[in-house]
Length: 249
Ligand SMILES: Nc1ncnc2c1ncn2[C@@H]1O[C@H](COP(=O)(O)OP(=O)(O)O)[C@@H](O)[C@H]1O
Ligand SMILES: [Mg+2]
Image 1 (tube, rainbow, N blue to C red):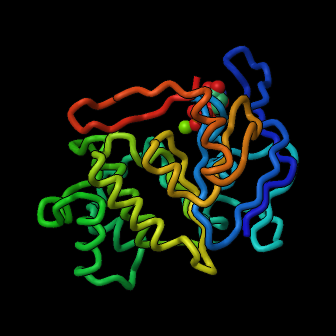
Image 2: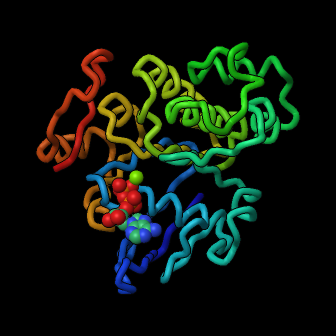
Image 3: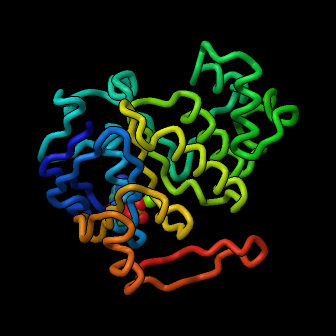
């Protein structure tokens, strides 16, 4: 179980002033559950993920993993303990092939498995395994590869930050099915999906709405769907795919 206790996080703006981004968050992520974290852009969703991963340092409060306070651990130490994060905008690693990074994610997985995971994220293995992970790949391709890495690693806590961005609806549905079957009712694992996608939210066990650095609503999809619905503006982002994205006003 991952527990955030009274978590605050500040950053300095261009004028050197401190701005509070997260304002006293209390969250418990239980094992065997798939969580959706949603809310308006700039609400603090990615900051929560980065604070959990140790990329951003919280300024107040504690983070516990299995009752151990991990607040002072580095990113690498937290990764070793079983926290994984697929970035909203993944970094590019020049000089490594896709096969290399998938091997790093799961050294024991054989080539057949690597191929399977690439197919799961909608990429043809023959076209991608030997490609360089630097320039030349689109944002959507990089995102899919990062998701394949996280699915292969399958750490205790897997945080997917807006997996729908740049990924087609067909692949997203397939991926979601995979995440749900892998994590739901799995006694050891937790998935956290940061998302605005109307297909993803109803399939999660619990929804957290983050706005202005605080949790403004929390519950099962049934319990809080009407709250989200009241405030959301339905937009067809990609007419071709028919992918409907909700944006909270
Ligand atoms: N490193 C940073 N420096 C300054 N401001 C930041 C930084 N990271 C996030 N913010 C600000 O914090 C707020 C929350 O951002 P973020 O967590 O990315 O929101 P979300 O993922 O919900 O869109 C935004 O106003 C954003 O501009
Ligand atoms: Mg974000």
